Image (cartoon, rainbow, N blue to C red):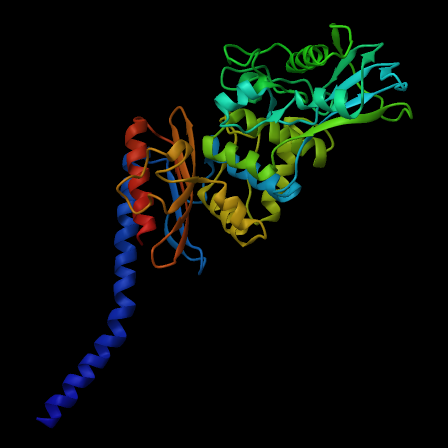
Length: 420
């Protein structure tokens, strides 16, 4: 009897040691097999996947994870992470009014005004940004109050010039031959109402800088400041001692702009931001210069990307699931990691994933970025599981024939990752 008891105890001890090691491996293998099957079912054989446990850095599941594929709007992960890191979450973009002559004691400016754009994608009228951006915007009409009440301006002997020279004058991205496209409004260093001709968003403007200048002139005249109604394009000579800034409005914080960009997958905002990166850190306000800044940032984070625009509209913008996951890992560990993650869309609740992942463990537990082009559907992000585990994943589907099926399989993959 004693011998039997000893054998039983020995057997139980062996089981206690062996089973905890064997069970997770089998469960992980079964999970990965299921995820791969869903990936191919939704996106075809050309698709790739990587899921990593953030704590250990170890892959939970991978399929063709090193092969670069079209990013679509997953490109915004690279653009916005660079913007938040290089500018800082609390940075703001200034739009200024400069004068090139003296203002006498009667409030008369003996010279011209310059409306100088800073590349703010949110500059516009409250009527527009309240209707289309949920109130996120920079009110151009705040400038007229400053000029009338703080500066005491009563008359301008010259005219108002629109200065958009912080950016080049290419209006679009490579996908549209750098002309204004149907997807995004014309890009300008002095943009207004996202490039639309009026606050109803019925059509795009030919030159957004001129629209902004006309709006400000009308506002100044309405406030009792005498100025000729004709406007023109012109660059303020800030090297001239007579030229000085006399009024300014600032954008919402960079974090708020990034949040709107990622949650709503706003192509216009993303393209303005990449030009802004070029203007401040790449030598010129061009898409190409901004793309180089983004590529350098990705390499510095142990990742990589072939960037050709800021939004992912151009199909030649590419990265692999591994490169996306490495970027997300690095951002999570950075000092602005919490801010970056919170600026992504919450599954089942916000933006492009507000109506997705309901009924799965991902609902309310994953912060994600979508991406869609013809034949392409992507989903990447972070999942915060109930047991405290953080999972990082990237799904790049490149042979999509049925977008609804692709979304359904992605949602189930994210749900499985969130419950692992």
